[in-house]
Image 1: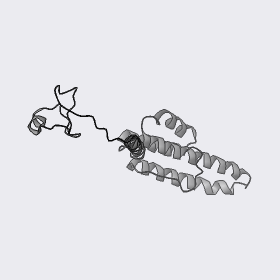
Image 2: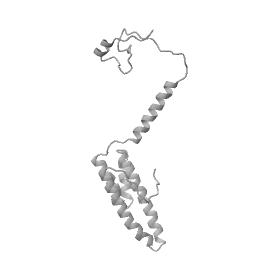
Image 3: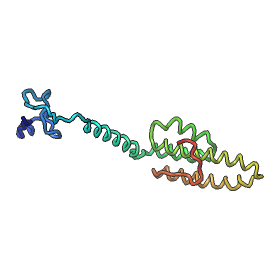
Image 4: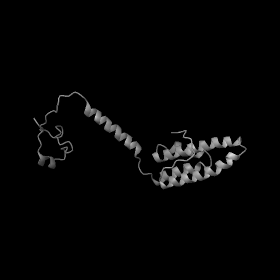
Length: 166
């Protein structure tokens, strides 16, 4: 026996689910429905639902909300704080990463660049400071470029950076 539909009732009754086009017996007493048993025991529908949920979760992770002005400023301070050392970007990233994925990504990028520059400056000692004279202007230019990109709400990746923190 098919499910009985009464279209005028479903328009007048807000408890009726139009998306499924079925009556919900708990919400509408007296509605006549028959169970749908098509005889197959496979769980294709369950697997499809699980795949849809997994796809939605991965989409939510990929899609992030637009950064607020405060998020942009904190991300900018992560990059510009890298000019003073690694401590300021580290503190900002640790305290603000749960607040926004935008700050999380920019904080990780600024930290990775700071660690890379520390390693480069340490190696510069062995090159009599030649490497340091090359790295210092690069660090300033790339740090300012990262800060400006963060302030505009854009993603930024340093061109010379080892990604220690993923």
